[in-house]
Length: 115
Length: 115
Figure 1 (spheres, rainbow over the protein chains, first blue to last red):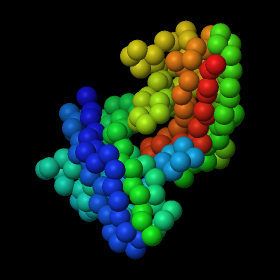
Figure 2 (figure 1 turned 180 degrees about the vertical axis):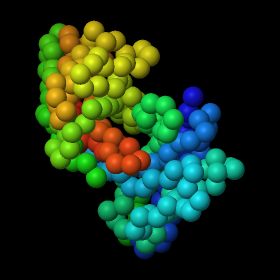
Figure 3 (figure 1 turned 90 degrees about the vertical axis):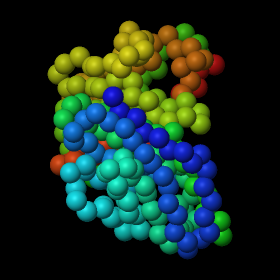
Figure 4 (figure 1 turned 60 degrees about the horizontal axis):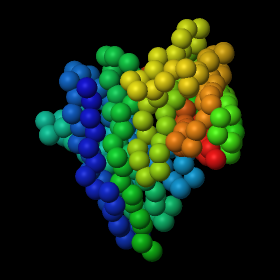
């Protein structure tokens, strides 16, 4: 069984500042993938970044980076130089690399960027 | 990443009618597609896995006779909500796994309102 926990229902950040969105997970799978998605008010789910459990280095994609701490089972998303367009819901998700690759999502964090 | 479309983007129907939602993979062939449902202010929940050439796999608690899935081709999966009721009103969104990490790319979603 897999579980994702996002403890921050809402976060505020000043424009141009960095923000960290928390995500912890629980899984019995030896190999798994961790994902972050952005969901703006339009509803679409936009893939942001991926981290494999076997990856030694933290993933980075432009302004997004993932602070992966395997021993703590955490995969926090860091957004640098926040922009107004970053205001959205952010979901952390996990899938198994050894079984069915359907995603299990957390409850999400609503990020609001303040001008 | 993969480009996924959904049609319609929104639909309003009367209670008791059936509604068909299409999910298309536009730029590659997908043997597997996923269907999720998202109620307001909640996270995405997997409903079923659509498999080309075989029956769909439904998650526990999802009625297969109510939510009919047909993976007609390698680029098209359809979800039919039969005898829709107001409690079926939700945001339905499909995804396609793509690439070495099977990252799921989502369609824009379909908002269903049953009166």
